Length: 104
Image (cartoon, rainbow, N blue to C red; front, side, top):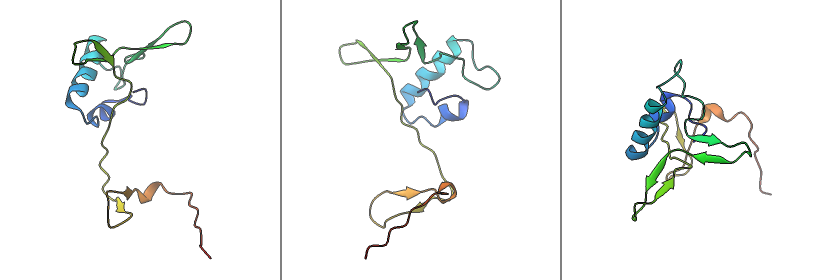
């Protein structure tokens, strides 16, 4: 959750319920500041360094469960499929360090 810093990152969240909770939390804190999410929007750090999550979902019993991670979806226009079977793709523009092994 700490990697989410802009509206673009929020729009990439897959779960619509969590996305709505994130928007509501930001609105509660006064909205975006110069296009960025306010500091400590998702976690509040205590004096001892412990992080207390502020986005909570209810479980079956209604007890709050903290949201620590979210799934995000990024659409890549030039992704190349690695293998014909499966759902594995690579973004060729960001692979600037590559090791090639030859099996002898």
